[in-house]
Amino acid sequence: MTVFILVSGVFTGPQVWDDVAARLTSAGAEVHAVALTGLGGTGPSAVGTGIDLETHIADVVAVIDRVGGEVGGEQGQEIVLVGHDYGVHPALGAADRRAGSVARIVYLDSGLPQDGVPALAAVADQGLREEVLRAAEAGEGTLPPPTRDAWRLWGSTADLPDAALDRLTALAAPQPLGTLLQPLRLTGAAASVPMAGVLCVGNGAGIAMVQARVDLGEPSLQALTDPRVTFFELPTGHWPMLSGPTALAVTLLKAAAGEGHRLTPADTTKPPAHLRPFLLDVPELPRERTDNLDLYLPPATDGPRPAVVFVHGGPVPAGASPTPRDWPTLRGYACYAADRGVVGATLDHRLHAVTDYERAAADVADAVERVRADPRVDADRVALWFFSGSGPLTADWMGKPPPWLRCLAADYPIMAPLPNWGRLDARFHPADAVTHAGALPLVLVRAGLESAEIAATVEEFLAAARRCGADVEVVDVPNGHHGFETVDPTDESRAAVHRAMGTVLRHLTA
Image (tube, rainbow, N blue to C red):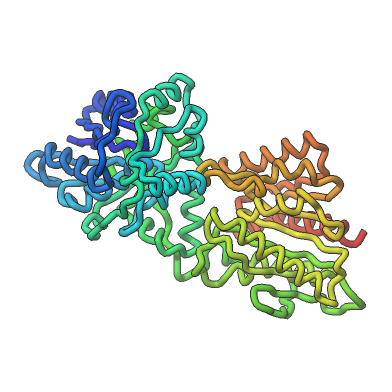
């Protein structure tokens, strides 16, 4: 028999699992929803002092011990621990202490907790993190639960019925601050326990996105390619037990059976997708490197030339090697631009996490000024070309376009904060900034096979652009994926690159 032990997230008690538990039980499973100390009442409840992460780990351990039995033991019970959101921290802590009794851990739309790191580090929203720290400094013992309209700051409320959101709000309890601030302590005993990740696409994360981060070499994610690790997607927001209990129950049963998608380990015999050859056969031109900036100059110059600055996406792990300016896509575009008679420029910026947009923007602005200051560059004729996760950086340039910016282009960009990013500074919202773009020509290259979560941000931006009459030329690659320049070397993709470059150069030289 499969025994599911369900651990809820911040502010929530075992009641959130009622519908899922009923469906799992009807399928023949045994279900225990853990009542975490201070969060297990039927409504807002008083929370005593001294409640921390270890308290909640003990709560989960107690349920494991009550169920009893070793994995594959005489009772034949297979314990599957399911941690949602914050709940994965006490779930993983308990698995570390009872690894021999746990058959599988399911990470339900949660992060990957690390030894010595508190749960607060997994909260994406900077404002919420600061709120927790202020409450702790003030000597408060708990964090008040969100108001009805503030749940979205803790995760997407997509597909959550009004009645469910009302019930979630009514049953919410204050979260003990110690549960968010106390570092998780792991011995590594649970590292051998199989795991499954259930990603809620409506909250901004999908399997393709995780695979891309694995391909970039992010060290903390390499263990996810272990064949004992599987993944599932649910097309809903952060609370699938309320927005889709039937689909979640089916997914949990499949996870318990070891089903699911397995990530592909990095193949050392061939380059990952982002390091494959550029789709165009362009001349390999020499470059000049100064600090974090590379310049590719036209073979022959007759005075200052216009320039295109290519801005890589991200977040990119700080230790990634090679760095983005050496990736074939950026090198290929820069060489292509130089071969067409303009200066191509690439740079490395410090977008290593979604909290880094401010410093990445400063890096880009500094590099652009250095390009314009070069005597071989016509400082009054510059274009900027952004890729992927650098999309939010376009807002700075659209919000108040300088007169020398002749065109702004973006390939498969993320044009609005993804739901699991938390509140991104209003400065980095392109859909708002485009209303101030005026006559600035915009070129947006759209991948037809883009992930749903990123495609939604592009559509949000284009809708805003249509409303304000912005000058946007959309270049479609119907059969192209994110990063099509190295992933899809087709005639369709090549035609899109030629068209986009031709448009940018036309605006530069007009």
